[in-house]
Amino acid sequence: MPALNFQKRFAPLVESGAKPQTIRAWRKDGRDVKQGDRLFLYTGMRTKACRKLGESICTGTSPVIIHEDGMVLGGMLLPNHTPILNSIANRDGFVSWSEMHTWFRQEHGPIFGGQLIEWGPLQ
Image 1 (spheres, rainbow, N blue to C red):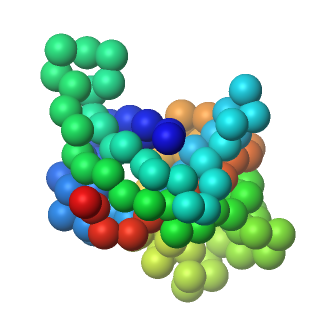
Image 2 (image 1 turned 30 degrees about the horizontal axis):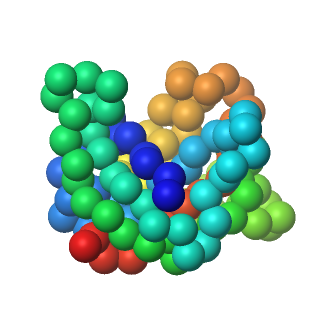
């Protein structure tokens, strides 16, 4: 039963359902999220401001690599300026692919590898 923590800026988007996915690095212990897992969604974990945003069931996962030329999602290369990248970014709480790409580069460096995690309505 994975617990996912969200930055304060993303919390309202998770609660409203506008952010039904997240992209996370692979876990070092190998216990990555799987379809069917019950997800516990929080903001402020490990602080006094910790707040549960909701629970949901993981509806799917895909391996993802974000790099300078775009994104590889589920083994498919999506080059920069591919229209679907803006849609993916919007579902992840960003205004555009450009904003999302910049955020990942600043937080994780030029190449990021992990998984895209999707969930259904919050319970």
